[in-house]
Image (tube, rainbow, N blue to C red; front, top):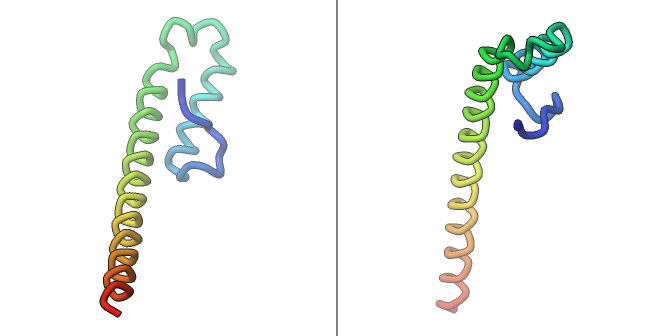
Length: 80
């Protein structure tokens, strides 16, 4: 199961793969259960993983920056 596949949540690269997967599922109503769309699905999983890792890295850096700003404010407040 994938995360929410709404277009506004993903990059253009992943949106293309999402469209291809949805189209494959529409065109292969029964064959999709036999693995016809599996290659596209695997590519989509890789793309979503890459997005998730980039978001995780960005959030970690932002958190580190915020913690450092708080430490700086606390150290200047305690020295007064």
